Length: 226
Image (cartoon, rainbow, N blue to C red; front, side, top):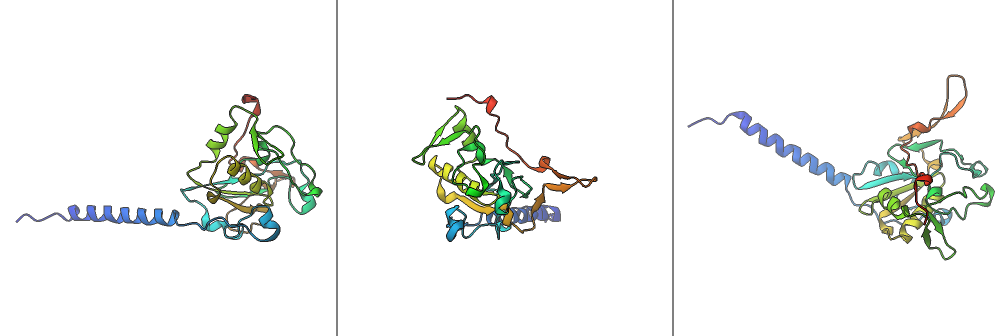
């Protein structure tokens, strides 16, 4: 009887092991998420989630079924220093990309201390009844390209306000509220995935290394007004 070569046995076993490991990693990466639930008090008014927020977002990074967005401007005209924040995007969480909410839709309900903030061009205008109207032919397409409806969406900003405004815009435009998590503010993040943008150069000058940020630019000059 012809002896079976060991290689013919080893290769199928290795293939099975690889498949099992890959399946295990996929299951872990796509594990069940708690439904979005508002925090208590003022944080809840901003839309910040009770279960997934700055305190534990590190546990939910890198999921293949999710996208991660920081909604701050690189340099916001609002005076966030007056409430203990930073009007510059001074750092971000590794894995997040940046899409400034003020370019998406009307900024409203900012704390009185910080002023009115950005009042320039936006993809959408928020109306008095809480609905939104598109200002450009491409507005809906941009929103759909940036925020895929088949994925979970994790949103944050400096203090939580712009992230909450983003969720409100998306839900009003047809996104599933149960797939969007407002995880709060970078100013309150103390995890291990921080990337500093605010630095001091060799001459002792403070600089902001914005080139480190995965940034989605919205060029209104290239869009067609409605």
